[in-house]
Amino acid sequence: MNARAHSLRIWLYPFSILLSVIVTLLVLMFFADTYARPDAAALWHLFLAPNGAAAAGTLTSAGQVVAGVLAIAITVAAIVVELASTRYTHRITELFIAEPTNFIVIGFFVVTNLQGIWVTLTFDPSVDFVPHWGVALSMVMLTISLLILIPYFAFIFHFLQPDTILAHIRKHTLDAVRDSRDAARGKAEAVRGIEQLADVALNAMESKDKGVSMMSVEALRQLTDEYQALRPALSEAWFQVDGDLARNPDFVSMAPEVLADVSSRRYWVEMKVLRQYQTLYNEALNKMRDINYVVAISTRRIGDMAMAQKNDELVDLVIKFFNTFLRATINARDVRTAYNVLNQYRLFGEELLDYGDGKRAVEVARYFKYYGRLSFDQKQPFVLETVAYDLCTLNEIAFDKSSKVGRDILRIFLEVDKESETEVQEASLRGVRKAQLKLATYYLLKGDEASAREVHRDMLHEKPERLASIRDELLAVQSREFWEISDRGQNFDYLSPERKRCMLAFFDWFGDVLPPRESLFPSAPPEPSTAAPAGIGEDAGVPRRDPTGAS
Image 1: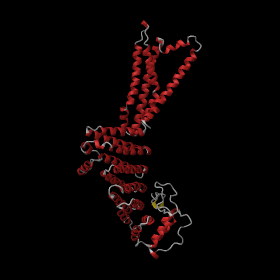
Image 2 (image 1 turned 90 degrees about the vertical axis):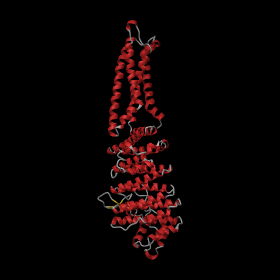
Image 3 (image 1 turned 180 degrees about the vertical axis):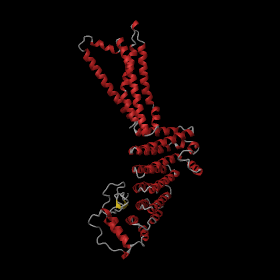
């Protein structure tokens, strides 16, 4: 909603409705009281030239009314602002006091009260003086004071809405950056604003207020995007990590060489934002997974923005934080979060295929392999399986884009599989082989037999019975989508009929080593246990099939 529409909804509409009601009632009642009098028309002048005693008595009472209204307004504002400050961030009090609307409204109440007092003082019955214009102005101001009370309360409650608070903090922070003639003061305000946005998210997480936490994560991303437009006009002193900034908790533990590197790369603001993301991410692991997903999405969008601006340093920083998120996720054994974060990391990798020479996409593929194997070693095999399917997709995208680094990513993909040690790890290794087979069928479908042959050579020493069972499982899967809601919404093992034919052609290259199938496609629907990737259940670590394959 734009500012004009907001003002109409908060102020003008309620004020107009209340004013219309009171004017209508006043006219109707006055007409009812005076319609039988022969001098009814002449009585209307009483509104502008009232009886002196009546006017003096009314203004005396009006002063008490306005004082009471002022007390009510201040009391309500103080209570709700304190409650909001306790729930979200103490910055709310400062923002509320600095808001010009509060000064205007409260100031109008005070002026109305003083106006009535001074006008009452000028009454003089001895000379029959009644300050008619002063009385009229006082009555108009009293009327406005009472009519704006409800709109003012609406303004207060709207001001204290989480999205409004976040917008105010973000705007104040950007204003401080924009007016950074004093670099040290501007940096202090920027750090304060970033931390306040993160504090809102943390406090909301403690209250299980997932929506507010997500809005805070998004506000940090918007702040980062809007900050990019201000960067070119900032002085060199702004980008230096020194003074109080170097003593900030997010930088104080860094070695001098690292701080010098951050200064030279000119991205301390972006690092500060991403460090807040890291704090929120770690806090949400195994508790509020939706926050993890939103952090991953926002991190990817920051990376997309960095690529659009050809900011190599920020792109590399985003990659590092994605790796940090994966490390924390694996250490926390939060497989379901890894499943979704890998999806965002892969989407970022797809965009990196078109960025520069594509070498960063190869780096991402290597990191996928590394963290897949790391999770495999820590008995979280489904993460490795997810990595395999994501690398399969990345290879397909690289092929479609005719990427120069496609062959490098393929070689990394074929190095992902590792011999299993347990039954669960065996299922994961089968998932890796399935993903590699899916990629081979894609190459064959696109007419690239050479790449499919490379996958075939990698599988020549695979156990025939394992390959045969994988073939049968893939042929049995008929549904593109899972039978339950999942975040990715796709069945890892699904192959279209055309790709299933390509898969059978692929297996023909093994000769008579594999036992033949009786039919090309089964007529009966598959059992659920054969149509979804293997995962670890949440109940005592018992292996089971899950709609996403994750625990």
